[in-house]
Amino acid sequence: MAQDIQHPSTAPGEPAPSCTMVIFGAGGDLTKRLLMPALYNLARTGLLPANFALVGVDRLEMTDQQFQAHVEQAIQAFAADKHYAQTLDEANLSRLIKSMVYMSLDFSAEKSYLELKNRLGQLKTTHQVSDNVMFYLAVGARFFGGIVDQLGHAGLVQETAQYWRRVVVEKPFGHDLASAQALNDQLRVSLSESQIYRMDHFLGKETVQNIMLMRFANGIFEPLWNRDHIDHVQITVAETVGVESRAAFYETTGALRDMVPNHVFQLLALTAMESPASFDADSVRNEKTKVLHSVHAVDPLTDSVRAQYSPGALDGKKHAGYLQENGVDAKSQTETYVALKLGVDNWRWAGVPFYLRTGKAMAQRKSEIVIQFKRPPLSLFKNTATDSLKPNTLILKLQPDEGATLSFGAKIPGPKIDIGQVKMDFHYKDYFQNAPSTGYETLIYDCMIGDATLFQRSDSVMAGWKIVEPLQKAWSHGDAPLAFYEAGSQGPNEVDQLLHASGRSWNQIGEL
Image 1 (tube, rainbow, N blue to C red):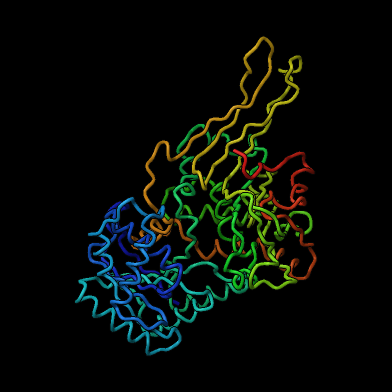
Image 2: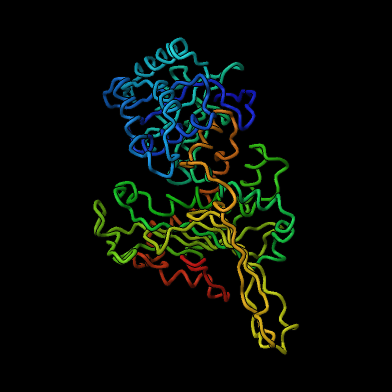
């Protein structure tokens, strides 16, 4: 098992240290649509190393020039996309393109990795780069272990005190607890924990990172962030798209595996974590992992709902049901929607339910965290026209309109005492100029400077899989029924029962 070696880190905001980035899967969609735009944005903002090289690796046959042209065409094609400024920075684009070379490589052939090792040695001379190397696995999960094994055998991930070697692993990290543990054990033969950067691009979004700052940097929120003042928490990650062209992947994955142990649980951890001793990687990840270890067992029958979208309509247009999507088994039991009721058994959150839901083909694309506070006592208003008081809510809006909304009661003008609900809205775009971003910029840059704060650690990954394991077993045995909901709707009716039994209700998807 590889040993951790500490390397000096670069201060955030400064250009990353000289390095080479090797992308396995360089011909794929992820590289074209997200990684290359992110690298362009880093170059445009001066955060990419001055001495930088990129090796595109895939099984396709291409020359360096063909690969460079392919990347440039892709960036030009997306020039009007939100990832970019209005006008391309031709100088930085040209510098980025010139830093790229390509290798056709058989992922399973030992000699291919020796050729890669020789190519990296050549780049030190031709591109004046250091021995620092980041290997990015933008490939299917089935290749992760084998590629790292080959990198280890070729001596490509061996570190010294003078240079680092890091490996970025895209999700999914395993498909259940056992496979995640097996993959982790395999990676740890060649890599130390500090070399493994488990990517969850959702954590690269500015508003997700801002959850911690909003909590811990504002004295009006943190004193109320506990069981004495909060009634319950709702976390929603809703998408309007269906499975589109990803049916082959989705049929073997489903909404639970695809979204819950990573995206959704990371939002849960950020919302419920205790204040870290500092904002260094280990302190933050320690507190997030403690939250997941504190989640009590989920009853598959009473605390969860699984569902699949049926034919419906989105924006006035007909939308096919999941079973009608290309590549989907006509008798598929794969869920496209999951809702859970969880409890966090610690001093801060004892007795406070957390309701989580994620689904495809929903009424609106929305990711948000709803903090609902407890109602005040009514005795003061018993002789007024106010017969009930709506609870105060704080909504942290993550996408698509990033910001926050705080609702509270105010007197309706007039001679009688009557209370209406008002809202204070904060939108990031009104206060800050959002830099063009894919969400990958922060994470690629953080890997280059050695900041693992926004990457999952192995114990956090295992804790997430441990929570959903009882659900996976029950659902695979057919112990929990599959519900249905129309595409373009709020979700299945069955999900309301998770809250209605205690007199609560969901914040409507599409509601401000």
